[in-house]
Image (cartoon, rainbow, N blue to C red):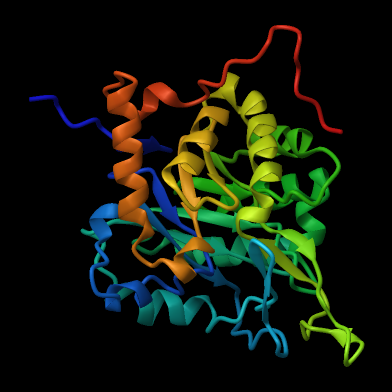
Length: 319
């Protein structure tokens, strides 16, 4: 009998039981999906908690979500109860024996990022993701994420505030994502998640007004997958010499999508928008990855990371 392929992955010294990471903002603070019949944390390597700021935030005015062809726009605006409530009230209710939990830190200043990170450092979360690239708030995130110097300053401040693995979430809405990655590595990041949503908008032509109350929002879903794949590969070329892992994300809705990201250089894959129309998609992706590994005679998923074969004369560059 053929041995079952190992789809577990190593990420910043953490063993994930599967390569799937549930993305921040898509599963709240990790409790929502436990109510879905048939959902199992055994199918999930890690859960990224909702973006958390120092003080509570009400978020943006409605509308906050808009369906688009092959995707969706969201402009939630980082609604959350604040880091103290998350640490004291929410984290104690989570079962850390089932899967890994990653905090997601947001802020409007470098100092706020560092302080929220410090408070999560003294908590049971397994790692901390720095959200420097949120495109649906009017202050903070998007400015930090599109400027390599500011990105590095945030990473450096957060690095001083925690000994936990630090994952930097990169923005696709910038000129040179590879240069940003280089600066963040120098500043002390342990890993990257790539990419965050693309900036977009929708218009109600009858009212002649933006659909979203925030005017702009983050575009996610299958529509952004080709962009995300290229960005992951560009970041991977910077990360490879340093052994820095990447959580690849952006429109993953099948095992084939996940495998593309792994070949492009991702060590793990993030699933987000697809959960809204198929809450049980993680099991299907995992089984599809196992089938692929069997067909190609591979014993473990790690053998596939960065396995994309390029013509020798081709060097992917930023357009």
